Picture 1 (cartoon, rainbow, N blue to C red):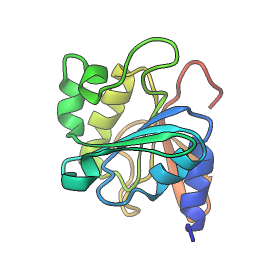
Picture 2: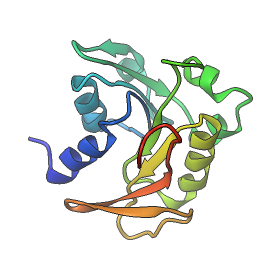
Picture 3: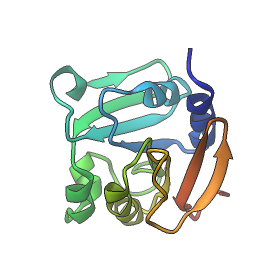
Picture 4: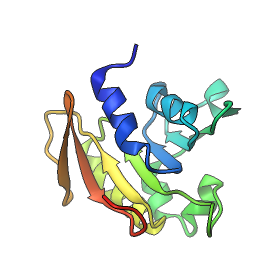
Length: 155
């Protein structure tokens, strides 16, 4: 059974159709929950390899897990192409999110979201304060930091 914080995070992300999870590691619970709700999720991590690199399609949405470095993606000439997502209506990324995002990856994550014209939301390791400007949203058992809101949906 999912924790209250995981359920609350999935509910907070539910308004976005296409999402990018940064630093997924082998914890794909939030991504899988979003896919089960009909969302398309690309999840990246520097430690992903082997079977985690395959595409998975569920009845409702899709999950693509890829090897990727948020710093390199933020600096890429075309981050959307590097992620294998298109541009234009009905394509691309609506929101970039991360769970337990360490301080040193917060700025590149926000930079990547900005380049993708996507919202950016994250939780921290708990003992760290955000190092980027954010709005705080209290969720059960955690705080969700909103570093960037998109322009097409209400925050």
